[in-house]
Length: 189
Image 1 (cartoon, helix red, strand yellow):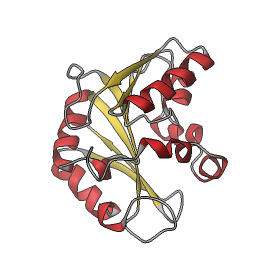
Image 2: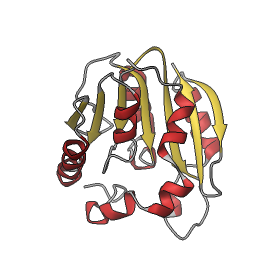
Image 3: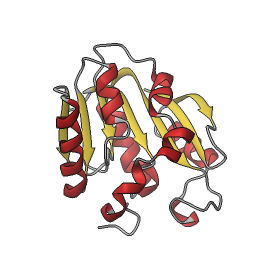
Image 4: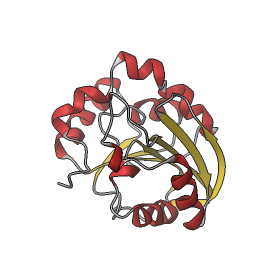
């Protein structure tokens, strides 16, 4: 496991009331303007913070990519408990997504791109996964000291991320700052 990857023993930190108040998943997903048949790929799905509400907002398939088996098992339990039939769990890394090209209308990359090595490879995979006209919601930690989150040297500044996605051939549609510690980039193919 890369030293940048999230430790699955901290799974409880991924979904808690404070995080939901600061970063409400349904409200953030609203930035994607989802249609009921859209296909969504959630990268580094973790405990399903975005997977579950995305699956409730669309009748299309939601693919939940996760590299850690323990997180996939926890997500499977949540999906089953919610009675969702449109979620497919996929074990794999963002750097080599084991799915066919042009699969998704939308990609969600929530607090995971700072873990990708190199970032350019992850962005290339997002490019490959998106249908023409598709877009990606990238929620990330701003590069500044905060009480929570990854070490400063793992974080990617919002300006650097914007430059990286543009260099990867994407068009930045919007940049917002939902908290002092986070930014959201919506970028399209």
